[in-house]
Image (cartoon, rainbow, N blue to C red; front, side):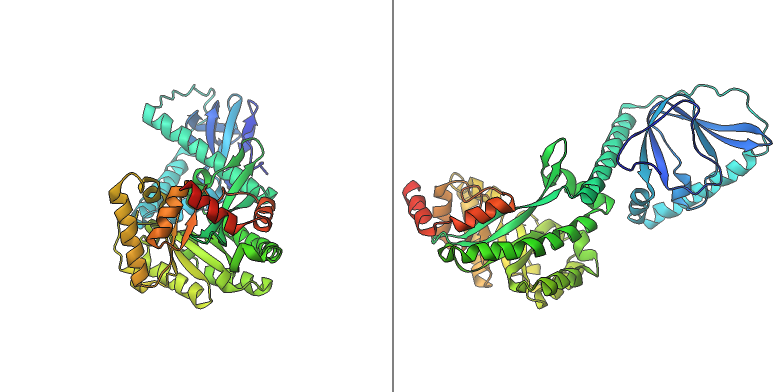
Length: 419
């Protein structure tokens, strides 16, 4: 079996697979050439020669039939394997018409292969002429990068390379701790910490986001008791139980099992449901508002909070504010960053705060980096604040230290003085 995390180097003459075998991988050719051939009466019938920038071996995965031909390295080759799961997940997301067209193409290709079986042997394999356009080369390079990253993500799951970092959320004015947002980080063995914006889109496209979310939910069950215990050592840090916010995706909400999975974690750990908040972005929410509503309603009925992240950037209807069980709005950092210099952004924040107040939903302002921003938001009636002014996302051990040493009164005095 191939190492799913590494490129494959094939010496010249190596047979990669034989006709009739089941197929678990397709292959992208980085360098070298591959002969695709049939064996007939002891001789080889050449079908094609594939070179750098091409893919082969995909047929057996696309239609689940055995390999239609054999493959051998003409010269030393470097290949990137693409797993059956990687291809079939993407195929399942494809438009039905395109899937039908693909099925027809595969059937006709296999018919062509059957006709080639009557041909005689070819004594010598002619060199391939591969001339990729700039666009095709860019697409191939992007495909290689995506496949490699997906395999690295699978390795990260298998080897425990993910970690939750925590960023404090405070009550504006009093500066008391209210809770934390859990943010996933990937501690890559060579690159160090990889931010989620680099790997979450690939995880979503590949379907790995389901397993990553399962890990996140399990990890929350592990760390929340430690956070609550730390708060007991410093009762003055907060005026009630701390909550933990966690980001979820549209893929999570599309899973019928998601509400039950997260509910089971709460039951088995004994964590109070009201101390967990699920965050989903406004733009993600609007891709499937009906499906999201069903899942979020179940989670809310179980006692969990529901937060809309990046509120104000989705350019969508506000009707969901009355139809979804939302308990918190989070104002996007872009508005906060510009509020002190741009009256328009300041007015937008005031409008959001007024709207939230009228429907009885508290607001968290994200991206607070200066004392003046915190002071202005407090004066406008914003309930909570989050940003580098209060703390960067840090590992659990640093979070425990932060809770135990949190001095709300002192921080409030310094904020007023600095503003």
